[in-house]
Amino acid sequence: MRRYLIICLAIIFSIVLFFLTKYILRKMTVNNSVFFASLTSVIGFCIFILFGFLYLESNAFDPSYSYTPPSIIDGKVRDGNFSK
Image (cartoon, rainbow, N blue to C red; front, top):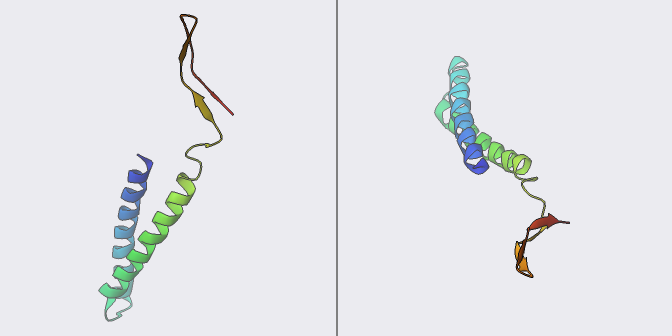
């Protein structure tokens, strides 16, 4: 679920960045402002995705934990648990 949130936020961020860059370049009367705005939004999208995945997915789980499933010993159910 987190990856979809990161992708959605990156798309919104890049769209806002596109229009902001386009607006600023039009005010400065720069020719080819759509190209520069597109390039800036693609670079911003890539940077946002990279930092989003590195920041939010780095601590998604701890692989040092191992899981012992529930088992039946002498007719009794023994609970499962996580251990290091």
